[in-house]
Length: 221
Image 1 (cartoon, rainbow, N blue to C red):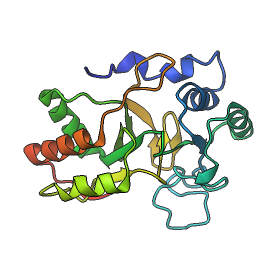
Image 2: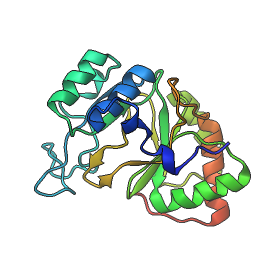
Image 3: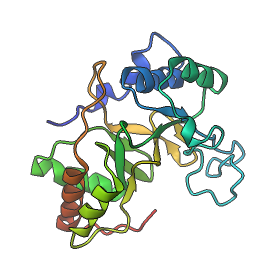
Image 4: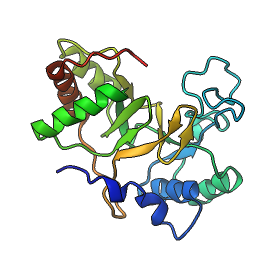
């Protein structure tokens, strides 16, 4: 079954009693879905493609944790409220792994073509995060050993694929980052429970096959 698009893309901002959009979304992720989150570093207001962190060559401007660090990610409502009350525009960062979803990401053009191919194959997908440059498919938590065995079994793994597992992170909609606004390409279905996500094996196998079938060749971004 396909995740429904369009009307549900702004679901999170409408379900939180008129609270500021970022705070409402962060509370849904942390308290309703039990996804550990923390505020990300902002993009540099003097240049959106740059990051406000000390690294002048930051490759994910405005889309990563900095202060606090990733280990501070939490599902505690009071902490989440305090963070986004003081930093209402801060990007929402999901700490992937453990009991939280992991992700597989790839360049936007390749991802859009791969998703079309997956739909034709009848592959069920969970939520998909889209930025102007990369899309991320959320999957069930996996271990490094599990991922290693999975990749070893592949004849070829496109270099543009990235894996966000234990100790990793992804930014969540509706965050604004240095590379643009994040949105749900496949929005989570409504309800209080955490969204369903597929196994990483199914996603990697299907994405690699779809990229091979469609002849998509994308540089690593």
